[in-house]
Image (cartoon, rainbow, N blue to C red):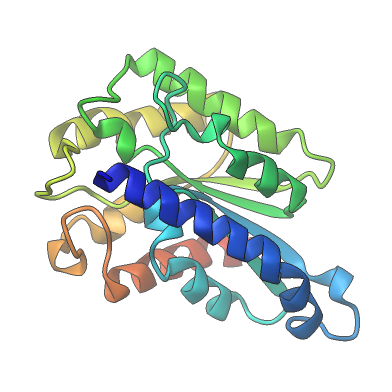
Amino acid sequence: MNIKMKLLAIGVAIIIVLLAISPVILQTVGNKNNPANLIRVACIGDSITGGTEYTIDLWKLLGPNYFVGNFGIGGATVSFTSYSSYGNLTAIRVAKQFEPNIVIIMLGTNDANIDNNQSDTNFINDYVKILNEFQGLASKPNVWIVKPPPVFNNTYGINATYFSQHIIPNIEQVSNKTNLQTIDVYSSLVNHPDYFIDGVHPNDHGSRVIAKTIYNALVLLR
């Protein structure tokens, strides 16, 4: 099994575990007097979401009135032409059923893999399609687009130059096209290759930086 398939399997396992335990979590944390008042945060992404501690760190920062759902899937892309586009995965349906009040979307890293490169226009259009899936929910979530962490030397085939020169600017174009706000995790970590395990995935310190950066953006809504 190659690394992409392993990461995908891990991500699917996380979704299954989440579905199994979420009723228990909803009954035991947050506003115990009225669980319905919990603010549901859906974290959408790839293995940087599904395979790190950032969502747990974010939940700790947000506090007991929030319920953070991790819907990250290893290997997920924006591109609908790849075998693992987030828009075609079961995870997006599960995330929508979560009826989030806030959606944090951090995708694009795997689109910098040479096997997944597509035109800038297609990337932008595909990202907008994924965003539309959440913007159309009855829960009317506040949707945030995250510029993913930088890419350093790695063995995954993810091109750091392509990522910085295409993916990040394309995400900015998506933000302009949809009038959605961005959270700049990229800039928070661009000078910290030491916060990464393998050049792509953040270590515990890096995960805390991601959580804090996202938290700081969400706090502005309070």
